[in-house]
Amino acid sequence: MAAGGLTLRGWAADRSAYLSLAEARPVLDSFGELPSVTADSWLAWETARDQEIRSRLKGGDADSVVNLVMFGTSFTAQPRVAPNQSEDAAGHLILARVKDMVQAVSHPGRNERLRFAAEWLKQNGADPNGPAAGKRVEAVLLENALRVLREQREYARTIDEAKRKEDGAGLFVTRSSLYRSRGLSLDTSFRPNFAIERTLAEIKTAGLLGRVRRTAVIGPGLDFADKRSGYDFYPVQTLQPFALIDSLRKLRLAGPAGPEVEIFDLSGRVLGHVQRALAQARAGSPYAVQVPLDGGIEWLPETVDYWRRFGSEIGAETKPLSPPAGVRARMHARRIRPDVVALLRPADLDIVIEHLPLPDDRRLDLIVATNVLVYYSPFEQALALGNIAGMLRTGGLLLTNNAVPEVQGVPMRPAGATSVAYSEDPDDGDRVVWYRRS
Image (cartoon, rainbow, N blue to C red; front, top):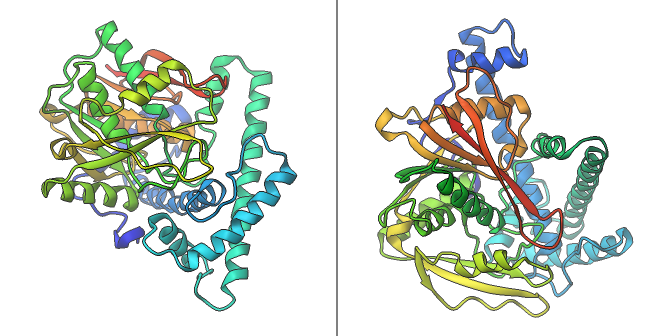
């Protein structure tokens, strides 16, 4: 079961289909995987891999809880952990924040993030209200915080080594499957949406994309407590589906009543969140988004301009929530209209294994996948590309900030790329590759 009592196979299991052996054959041959596979053994492999991929959501949940411990403000007066702190200073600060979290999760009240953290702890043998709860909760939180710090150091070493050995293209490939063994995290921020808007503008200029009627977002995520600019003083929200609609309308690539947006995800938390938003929209209620701009970052002017205009085509500006004391952030808020929310179509789908078998007149014009394919190996990415190709119309586009392996027999080829910087930090940016279905 996923959070909130939702089954992992909930929303669109009757619509999704596994990639057939014939469809997967070009990828299998290219990578030399499963050389003697049969139709039956291929189905068994897909079923097992689907379960393994879905099990990685638990690791992503653990990472979200760690991000909350290190960067949240709702449960502590301690400062947020900063990337430039020494290991000793960061260690003492994390310990102090963990102690405050131990107290907070025993009485989470209506705080959605704390309630999630309390449930996660309970599932991991540290019931915040059980016997000897304090010590056990503290031990589990510290263990996971230290694990995340070790993983981050290892990722940094991998990138530093790639920088020394490889050119820019090689470094991009290394980054593109960096998290292949990591838990599937849902945390997100507004940054990649700016890169997607810039990319769409370049694609329009190049004449590669006309009117978008149907599109999809793979793994839109939830703004829970992102490690770069995550805050928890506003409700949990999803941003990318609305950002995509906003950008397409802004660039006149979609009509005033569109486009439809499929939400492909395998997280019950994400799908349940979207379903609740849809239910509220049917009752006439808008969807409020709070978009923070971290005051400790030297943003580029174009990033600030995008932040300021976020949602201008799909909702009315509203008074934002105020950051708590000690949090340096500017806030922007929009109330997204119910008719816009109603364009979302959530579907439970594992993009490595599954696709929607769409008729020609329902195929997608555009698919967006940012900070998603990085969690998979090149072989899994190639399978995902096969599933994506099966849902796109001829000439349709995939936009992703990962390098995905090209495979002969899978009709997807690079058509361009857009590099976007967000701030003065040279590592704070994205390269979005355009893949076009032939």
